Image 1 (cartoon, one colour):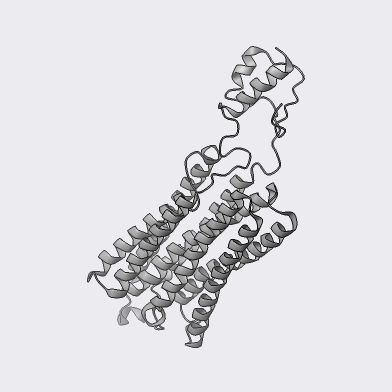
Image 2 (spheres, one colour):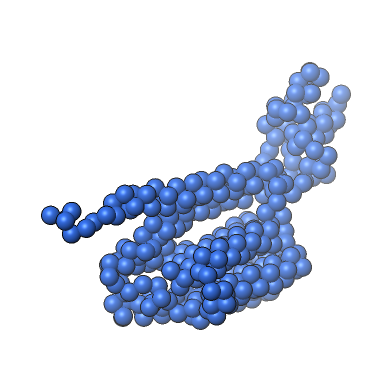
Length: 135
Length: 218
């Protein structure tokens, strides 16, 4: 085997796939297209306008229902931004981008829901502050 | 080799058994061009930034109802102003996208033009936010007034501070691009700022939904 042949072989092995210049390696990021940005923008405008309309007009009488619906819109819009603006996919950086994102999402969920849960119960347990207990 | 960026200085071929292993285990120290790991590193920075915001959101979630007999969201927030602010940030996101498309085409002038348009929308966002803060403070709704207002100013202010630094970075890159052109290093920097800028827009979705809109529903 000549040195050159070995180099080619090693090159293929080192990158682990047939195309060594695949997206994600050597600082190449997935690029968006005009179509991606326009779709992302239009979806974002719609997904922003509806929650604002719902709250400003009071179209749904029940506040809890409205809150759940706008939270749903926020989650969908975050995914839209991730896909169309941040060009997230499972392949960028060999999947490490996605893995870091999933890990962060889990920690964020634990921090926010955990804090609210614990503090709600603490407030609840300290609630009965009647006049006779104040003395 | 046809590709000048890949050099493999291997003096002697390895045994066949080891080259097979190389499929799973990178045995040769192949060369990585400068900045090959920047995008992943920057993404991980953004994820850590995400945790900062998660803690501030958690603080707001816990303290957001503690008005200390002071004004609450319904007395303070003006949704039309928030809607205008949101649209400024959304416009700045798509114009930054146009700057990235111009960068891919290799057009220096258009890249700079769209970056500056993005800066105008970013500055408009900040101005509206500062106007809102000034109004709140003028009405006596200062960060010291209640736990709700402390949490509100910390969360929204931290986001605004990020946008401010994003603008400083953006102007720096406009100058960099005019001096050096769209070299690989500048492209990498523009891609990092792209992630940063769109990330701030993602955080803002959380802010307008959970702070402003849900505040009005309390």
